[in-house]
Length: 414
Ligand SMILES: Cc1ncc(COP(=O)(O)O)c(C=O)c1O
Image 1: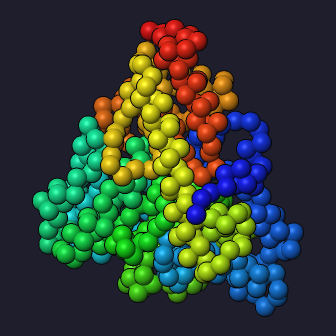
Image 2 (image 1 turned 60 degrees about the vertical axis):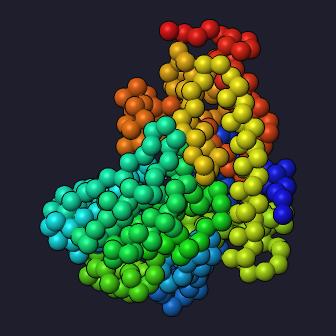
Image 3 (image 1 turned 180 degrees about the horizontal axis):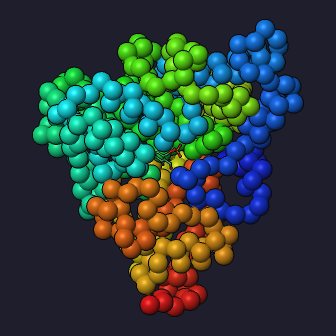
């Protein structure tokens, strides 16, 4: 199955502004069906949940649909899908609930590959509980997170292992299943950050061994919503802080305040959009939505891999470029510097050429520290998602080449 990228791009109105959107790792654009679903919720009328009138029933249905959609996307149980404003907020929520079960001298393992959203909430919760934090290190030369080190990091006091399914700057996809197997062997739980991984490949949270799997819809063509997926039976064992009158049922127990109902309608539309990528854009195609998602995300993965090959080779061929990380399994995410230019200057130059890239540490705080880049401005991140095409990559390479001095040089600066 291949991706019809021209048809995909036509579904995204924002792409018509002529910019090359290589900033998808910081958030994707949204296709028309997502915009329509959000607008339609408001146009049709929505009420707060649990009332006896149709507008309230519609909000109830929107929430249930969003849980089913996220469960289909990552291979979970809809009854274990906790919805929230974003992943960071949800990790803090789970850190509070899990840390309430920790005792002094219990241990928590975090990794320097992770975005700070799956590091700091655990470090801070551990400090409050008197628990010990252990660090899994990254090989700075490759950007890999070696699995072997977990044997020494884990023990009978380990309560939680937090690890990312993909680095948001280097793209590294560590062997989460192997790490989770080691964690489970000592009776620890795993919290897997799937925010960067989910848009780039089929996901099976169960096969990864993720007791908790976090994902953010705005990274996969949806609205600004986060979700954590877990076994409902595991959620039943946790007692997060909550208001007295709010539901004590699972997963509602973990959800604070009134939900953004219209945006949640957009979450379902985004998942349907992804499920339709394999067979044209839309809800068509055969098989269950889960089956269609697995097929279309496999098509996304192979499309991005090929285009990323062009991007990487192009950067490698330019003089004065340093590329960070060369992990064996990765998403289509490049992190690089141009000699003599700050990452901010490179991003600004590219913006002037109509190319959107990110620069800086991108909240990969520990990783940019380990790479020795954090205090000097990080690096430039150019990432692909399924709606990027060859012209986006060519424009990036042409813009970088101007700075790297191989064509139309603007000089190297100091
Ligand atoms: C890998 C990764 N984890 C976590 C986050 C935080 O997600 P959110 O913005 O939904 O809090 C991000 C955001 O960029 C990310 O890339």
